[in-house]
Length: 439
Image 1: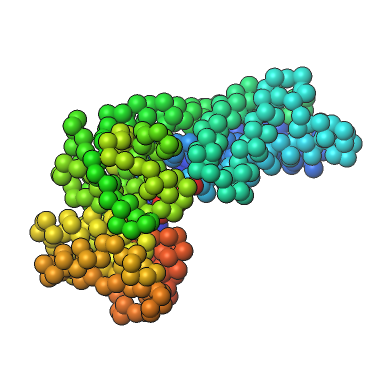
Image 2: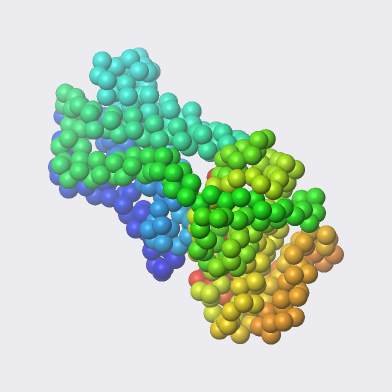
């Protein structure tokens, strides 16, 4: 069913698949001097190449973090989910593209098929296509099938921009061969569309790599104070003399820390403080290599660059009855919401927070939630410790079909609970969650 939550994704996929329609808009010689089987294989090669390039270019547009794209898809986490799906589909199609063309020479010119994927063609455009093919394989296979360090993963995605540029030059300069027209040369509308998509993808790559870092320099902050509530949780307070950041409750930012011994790669963190305050408060849990080093090494006075804010995870878009479900570091947006709820008049009649942790020592913010809930008649807070009573189940919450459900936490947590709520008859558009797994 088409609704506001998936209409943006439908637009993206239609844009990616439009080359298929444009392919048939103008007749293209289907066979030439070859038999029907060879023509079909060649058609598959051209179509997969065109659609793969369209998806590849659009994936770069989605990764640009442009606010219009975030609005279209309903949040940066949703943008990256579509980006991942497009990227995987583009990879498969762009691998099939040269393999299909190589199969044209089987079985009569088997040696030609074997050497087709090597940069030994007499035409530069063909060699560029080979370079793009091998570059895509080298960079995407580790991303899709191997867990690599975050900084190396980001570097591989930066280099993918070069693959897009080389692939674009190949697409726009490849020439017709005897008995076979190149569709993009025979169809001006298709040529214009593919050129526009490729240009948008390249411009997005340049914007993300060169322009966006310059814009983030306008948001220079300093680590004002640090608290370590336990051995795994770090609370960071950022201040700026330049400007106050405008954000909505629960939004997140990308932060890079300029301190010796720490990676300068930017990482996403939810803002836990209330809008219109002078300082930003972040809660960080030691989960990976970077956050562990951050917990151990970060000191007051470190300079930071902040990009954002991003996210559309906002309790103010829900109904008057709400369920808030948090696990682990996923408590961060709810902390911002509770603090905001305590500072404004709200139309919410009742919000019930369930703070899910493994053991009580992990619930470092629970006392604050209890204090806020004691002052607010429309907020309840409950602690769920899996070591004591097991994991929270949707059926434990009673009849919640008239409530909006907001979840944040590990992917397994949100995925399992979403499936449980759907089985209980909760409408899909009443279940909201934010996915921070951008890789």
